[in-house]
Picture 1 (spheres, rainbow, N blue to C red):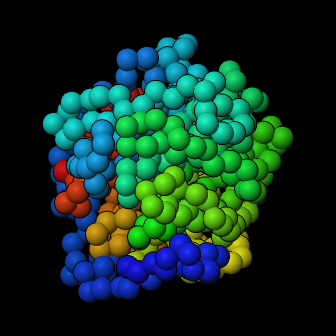
Picture 2: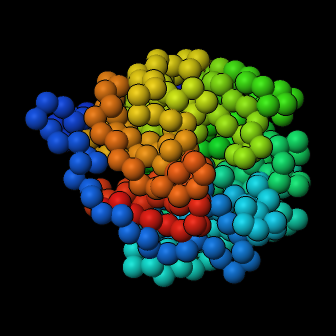
Length: 375
């Protein structure tokens, strides 16, 4: 992967992701990734000292620096401890770090009243979670004042340093309820792909509105300084979304960048996966992109991760299953990984991430507020 320097033309700079033989998706004679994983284990509780619940974002730390430890898992919490057991949605302020053997520490507790920049509405940490080179943690915030969708506000992306201190916020210019995110970096440049779910949803009052978006946000980090936003491009639009009394909001969620630069998006409302071509270079919106698969084993797909060979893993909000789909749209495997809740598995899953070796899947269980692993 090669990325042009930040001092070059910023709007058109892009990564080149060259396909390799090892990047071929599961095909004829190739065993699906999920078929190799048969054991479910609970690693640790995700509940920190302040009682935050409803874990959403999951990210496996690739580089050990500061308080971040390579191979550990970062988890963001969306709800606070009020009104147990569910808490108030959009009020969670903590990131926890969990070792593979189950030791949990609090990486950050974010004070909504002491932010270094604007974040309309405050702090409610979402599934949008990544760590950039140098230990810069970027996490989405979709805040509420009272845990209901009526008070949901645009929020922001929060940028924390490797010690867990919020150093800046990224708000406005299309950021409106950042719900999930993936990123790719090289040198001084990082590209964030962020889904947004509040474009017209609150005004819609529970009715479906087709205004969900995907932004590509280009960040530049020079001389060890703070990552700076240098460009924002809407590359996806028109995704269905709606408010929901149980889930707060439902809209485009998981995103994953394929080896050829295609961005895959989990369309939660319509239970499908779409593909936005040329995600690293396009300068306009592809709309929802091309639908590669719909229905079948998909049942409200939420978080997304890509296997080492490029297959798409999504977890269902509707039934607690994990589904594997090839980039061409063939659903090749499905496995139940959570049967808790009413109905069984519903609402229990959200974020997921592969371990460092790419042979296990970390995922959060919102029903029990724990980090689990499929291995």
